[in-house]
Length: 398
Image (cartoon, rainbow, N blue to C red; front, side):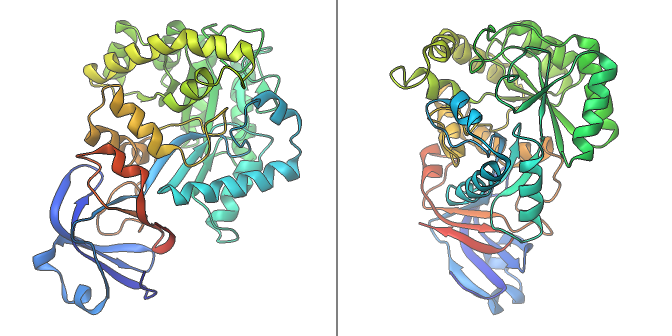
């Protein structure tokens, strides 16, 4: 890879985050994209730059994983790993896992729950250039009802009532949160609570959304059961995480309100497909959700619900850097390949309120991935990136 601060990707197929453009060129100057257009019309600055011959290859925006847990490694027992965490260990794991995403072509992640403000601090360190890694938007603690999902593993703070929820949102933002997460239902990895249990009231959820939006933060709702999903959607959350039981009413509401869906197929499959390793209570719940998860995915795709890529990386057998695998699963379950690529680029950037990532256009951050084939034709191409740039710097190569 050229070391010049000005690099030109010549004669490539370019997926710009929305559509495919054949025989195009991309000029990178410093940490920004300076020009993109037909290769035959490349400006003089492109001819003066160090050239990367991309004929036969596809250049795409860096991928965005909208649901990760950087402080967890994807081991078989999530609860045990949580018990062993200390702030220092959590920091080291988060830093290492943020870097692992880069090798897979994932240049931006949203962390949706961890110990204290550790992931927020790691994200700030990456942004300042202290350590390398994918760009991190972190939510700090998730918010859960007393005894709700996540209460036992230190990634969620227990808070009840609209006023208390509003205060908790403010406190998470003060600690550095760039997103807010609420647990609208029970979950697979919390023993003693059903995965579809409906948790927060709509009033509590509305308080979280109102306060977060006032501070310019988006809200993600962990929601598995249909009633919890509906409450969260009607309260105005920005994304539904998991969304396993998406009834016709659910998808109509999500479509009408423009709510994003993050299916986290890697998470449910990682647990369900490893019954000899993952605690039995989690396997039982995951397996009970698999068929509904697939049907819900098909229903949401057909209804035109907007999708993003979210892996829930860090959960059992779901390692960091699994974003490309999630895209393959999303396509296997019925999303067109180009739709999956949009989910992991421009749609993810829209959800995360990041106007300068997720697309290839002049002025955007030079977060780029080069693939040997076009993933919009064959999604499996995302599994083998040949080159990854983060802010114009080559951070991984195949």
